[in-house]
Amino acid sequence: MADGGDNEVEQLRAERDHLQGEVERMQGVKRHRFRGIAAVLAVILAVTSFSLALPGAWARRTITNPESYLGVVAPLASDPAVQEALAREITTAVFEALDVQGKLSAVLTEQAPALSFLAGPITTSVEGFVQDQVQKIVASEQFQTFWNDANRLIQAQVIAILRGDSTVLEIQGDRVVLNYLPLINQALQSISGTVSELIGKPLSLPEITPDMIPAEVIQRLDTALGVTLPTDFGTLEVFNSDQLPKLQYAINTAREGLFALIALFFLSLAVAIGVSPRRRRTILQLGVAIAVLTVIERRIGISSVDSVVNIAKPENQAAVRAIAEALVGWFLDYTRTFLLLALLTVVVALLTGPYPWIVAFRRGVADLARNAVRTDGSVEAGPASTWVAAHRLPVMTAIGVLAVAILWLFDLTLGWAFLVVLVGALLGFVAWRVLRPPAEEPAAIA
Image 1 (cartoon, rainbow, N blue to C red):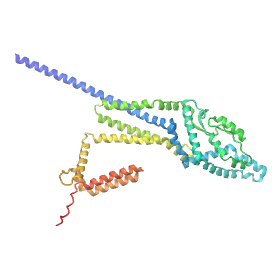
Image 2: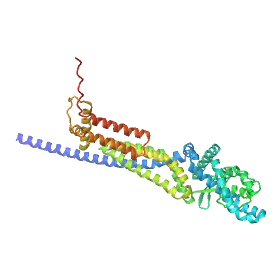
Image 3: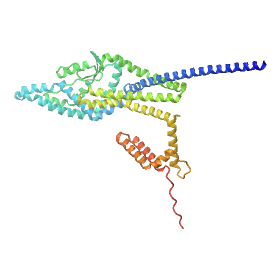
Image 4: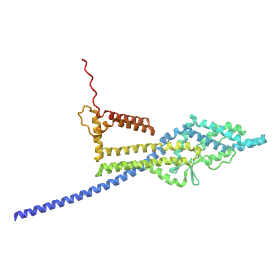
């Protein structure tokens, strides 16, 4: 009886241990599942905060930071397309302000009525001459200083109106406009002597300061020039005023929420990797998601440049493209950098993984490396070395063709071109060396 009782006790203990093991296993499965869900949510949060932080960082650096903004736009004063467009637009505004054709027609009618029909052709010729003079002005060192000062003011006023306290930028009807009348006034002063001779009397130009509102400047020009200028003369529509609240919100978010987004990204990144039951998979998910989002945002940036260029006048599209590409240049450069980092992360995670195909790949690389260094037969040749040695010339030719194709098809910087050449030369050297027998020793001198 004692033996039977002991057996029952042992059986009950075994059942208890089994049930306890099952409970622990189920708890482990639940914890594993919970950690997996938490990791996925953290990945989503990290990718979302990254996608919002990147354009926010661009806006904060390029638009809201005065020195960074000036560093972007200052070189544009030397761009030939920008100079030509500025000269053309300023000349058109000057001739509109002075009514040159009307005044020439009046002078000719008074002094030589038979020649009054020449007012139009003479105005066209003079306009071309004045545009050449204005283009010389915008190509001068003095204009570079003016350009820098004007853009510093523009940047400050763009931010000011987005914060609601601008003076140079103002809302006219349903439009937010930029006042560039001081630039027109400088052009008028620069060519006042030439135009005075054409219209037969000296020009008396008013003093215009950058902080004047457009309506006041136009009134002074009307009085001084004896013309009636349109209310939108010398102003440029920046955006529709019904878009202002959205832009103000975007700027304030970029300024105030950027660091919170960056902190949230790194926190979510750490949580995703820390709690994940399969860290390599999580890292691959992060790398692929960031790469895809970076490509999307990069394409949006490029598309925005094309959209801005397409709505510009055909004669100004080259200048508009130069300005737009300069403004989004930092964004495109950094999206390319983040894209390369994300792809590099994916490649490293794959190359160091336990997947059968990558294990075979690593063995093949190690086999080639060993047999390219050791040529005395002490290292056993694997399938990779044997195959490369049997196809040495085609392999070396393929490596060379691939390197040349990359250099030909892609516009690479000097550093990247050097890297392509270096990698190609290294691979070619390995293919040439693998399983090559040692050279015969020279015969000893008797």
